[in-house]
Image 1: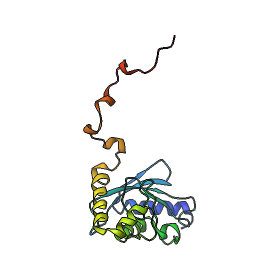
Image 2: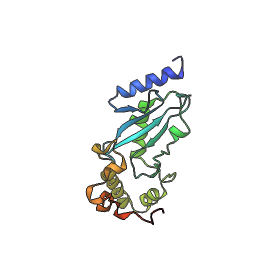
Image 3: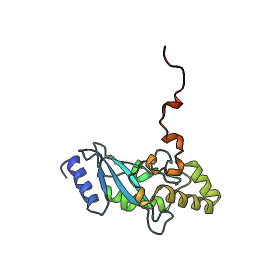
Image 4: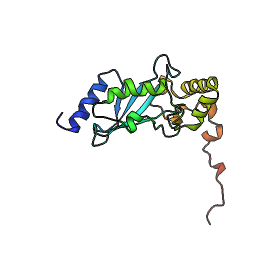
Length: 183
């Protein structure tokens, strides 16, 4: 490969041809979303996560930035930001790796073999070590709540059901104006 931009283009095409749904953020090839399915034989099986990928200018010499968009309960995934704690992405990245490696090897390995001794989510790590059945139940609960295939791409506001919205939120009458009118 003659340049990082050609390599970026080639890796992205390879990822798209590997049956992953890839959605570009803008016209450039530096930021995009990938729909990632939980690995078979894991607690995450059946779940689908939208993963945000950002490729630095120096890719493939510098690792991509990876983060889950929808929530995941896992010791090595920050619940709020979706950031991933994975040595191969954060410290030991090599230009020999590509985007397909990230989605076919690195992320599935992370989900299959969590490392509670190096957590981004301390609560998940503690629960995993203290009460494995309760941890597994919480993982499944999060999968049901946040990783249903039909929810991919829906914003959290879109997921509110009608029962969760009170009638007050629909009421837009002027009766509820607070304060005194200007003189």
